[in-house]
Length: 230
Image (cartoon, rainbow, N blue to C red; front, side, top):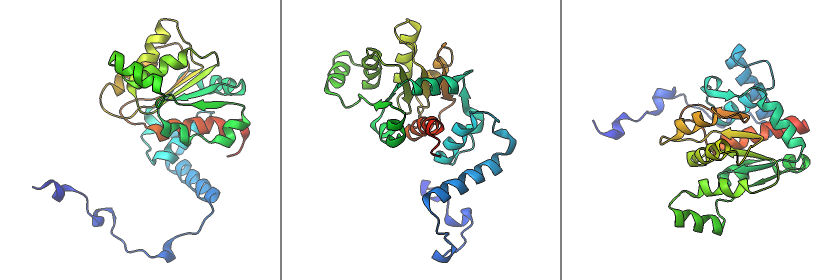
């Protein structure tokens, strides 16, 4: 059978004919409110009744994937530690510019925090090429030299999590929070498990799923909790 013959057809998803009359005209905030109501209804009592709920719901809202109910893992006190760090002006370090662009800048500014990504820096590219390693791992080393309290948000590169683990193990860095949600197939699962073996607060999506959008939305969930904007 040709590969194309195996692809889903519209009829397999219902195939119902729709028109613009079937589309509800809603404001952005009403769309978000309705979406969260749907998530709460469909997830039911599987969402914990504590401060993890805001993050879990926003991740599902971003991904439309209820698997995160089972795979999103929090170390004890991770949310509280993250909020305390943000109140103290922590910097968020991302492993992609996509994650950086997805962090809500007004909420970030209101919290008195900054977000940075070093992936496009020339010194990072030179160092990575010279050593034959990924830029993501060099970015972690560059961030480790900063004096600010740091939150790492990793949504793409397992090598960033692996280097983080090594630096934490060696006592060279102690992040206030590691958001470990890289997506993919090679070393992704293992890198997340390594972070969960450290003594630093973490929010990790076990398994293959994740992404820069998920990393950004976790940051936003924490920022929104601080400023009460959502």
